[in-house]
Image 1 (cartoon, helix red, strand yellow):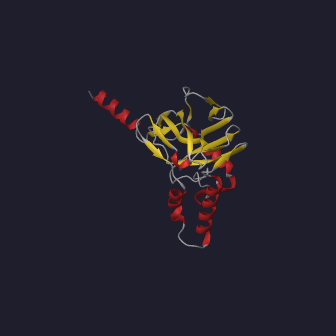
Image 2 (image 1 turned 30 degrees about the horizontal axis):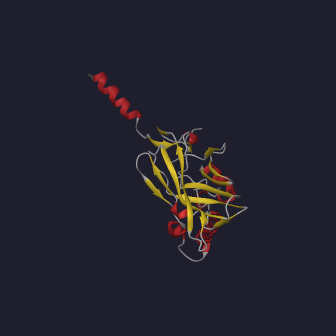
Image 3 (image 1 turned 60 degrees about the vertical axis):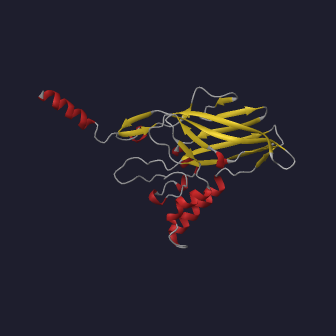
Length: 237
């Protein structure tokens, strides 16, 4: 009986400090009609000569895109990640957002309209995540705006300027044009193993008033591994 108690106690102690982490998201093997998987982790919907792709980005990728803004510790001004900052007592950097890279190549229709504010995520365990539009992101970063001068205000302006330049803007993509940009959603909970990025009501045909006559509802399926550990695998030296 003493042995069983000690064995149980050892098992409990071995779980101290354990938490759930998630591996990077990857395209699921099963996709809808017209969807193809790319080597970079993108899922591309193709219809005639129209391509609409979605990729879930890792922080490492985003830090490379804004390298100079991601290497200043707690003063990093990468708006999509925390850069190389690490919370006190941790050896890893937590994610700030879920960031999607959305691309359109239109060589088929007179014009195409994808409205990023309509994008959302649903998960296999019944969670729903809505997009963080520019207004919500402005609110998120507003604590940096403690004055209209000084270093904090400069960092706030840098982050918001980068957001405005790089988020996906709701505008027509005319024939022969391409568009690309980031879409930002909250961080997915660590228990999410499979999820769908919904891109609804993409207009591809319009009447003379630019009211949509034909729209596409696109679903991009992703998966990821969830595991228990004391720190994420990439932080293990």
